Image 1 (cartoon, helix red, strand yellow):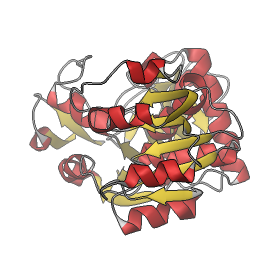
Image 2 (cartoon, rainbow, N blue to C red):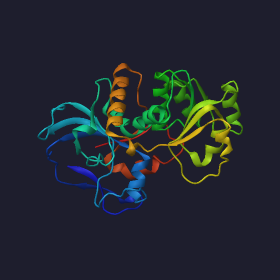
Image 3 (cartoon, one colour):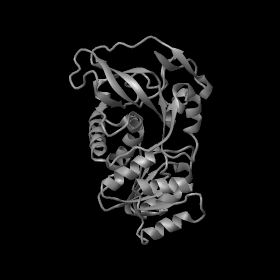
Image 4 (cartoon, rainbow, N blue to C red):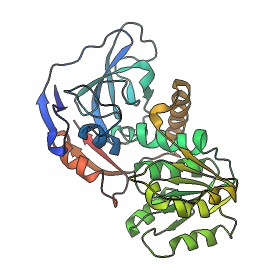
Length: 322
């Protein structure tokens, strides 16, 4: 089979298309024929060697994928050959940037017939992170107002859809007109241009001066100070992304009984992951969740995908098609 192989840590150019041996499932494992593989920012950190947990070299990147079950190992009871599935769970299976992958039964979920394989490959990290951020970490409640700060990427789109389906009032920001239109189409009640001076004043006006109950923050090193000042009493900021340091005034948390909460999906418990993906499957089935795709690229274009996924103005999810 063909797979992307990283033989040394480095830039996108180290992503090389290679011919490698076909895979065989062992006990408890499922062999999946990959129809689409999701590209996430974390994949670029792993590839560069900057991620906290470095895989042994050589390795195939990619934690998210979707396809059909080809075979199952001894002890696998839930899945059978031919099942449509998506794969999630960083560090629990062979990489998704390949024509085949192996995953434990616990890292698979059924993919409904109304969801394409490319959409399925957009679920694991982005929608898993959004769900974890809203409910487990953010403590979201129906009727609250949530701001998805930087919402036009894969996690942001997922958060908007999940929050809207969960009964929240949803605000989102994006720096392009196309991004803001996509957020409105996907369920946001109001959208704002975070590249516009004074945009946060407009957000606050949209709350009637009450402030925001919850903020999902994609770029905390830029936005955390203003986030804290925009919270309602008892408000929470969930830090999903940050690219540097920031100085804040802790009194901004004291004045609102506010919380700043970190999030790393890789630290979710097995039970939390089961709950997340049971919920995502239900949302796909009832049509409330519809992953938005920005690019579908052939496997050989993995270096381009790793460059594009780090651009600020992308809308939706990039996937590779093995």
